[in-house]
Amino acid sequence: MANSPSAKKRARQAEVRRLRNKSRRSEMRSSIKKVLQAVASGDHGQAQTAYREASRILDRGAQYGIIHKNKAARHKSRLNARVRSLAS
Image 1 (cartoon, rainbow, N blue to C red):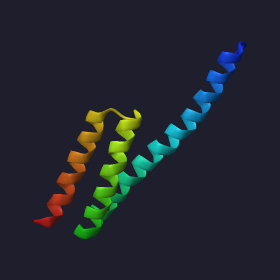
Image 2 (cartoon, one colour):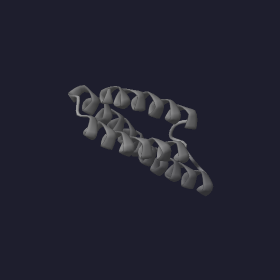
Image 3 (tube, one colour):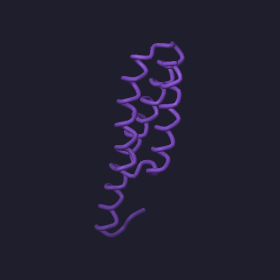
Image 4 (cartoon, rainbow, N blue to C red):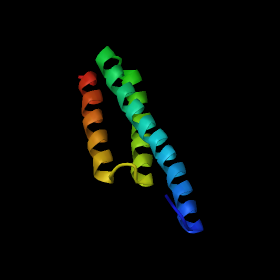
C-alpha cells in the first residue's frame, strides 16, 4: 500500500485512468462489432456509417495510447476491406 502522500495521489490517479481506459477500450470494441454486424447483415450504407464512426474511435484510442497507432491502422484497413466487399 502507498505510504507517502505522493504515492497515494499516484494510486488515485492510476485508478481514475484505469477506469477511463477501460471505458474507451470498451467503446472501441463495440464500434468494431457494430461494423461487423452491419457487414454480416449485408447493409452497405449502414456498414459505411458504422465504419466511419469506428475509424474515428480507433484513431482516438491510438491518440490516447489505449492501442498502438499501427494496430488502429490494421483494424481500420481490415474493416474497410470488409465494407468495400459489400459494394461489389
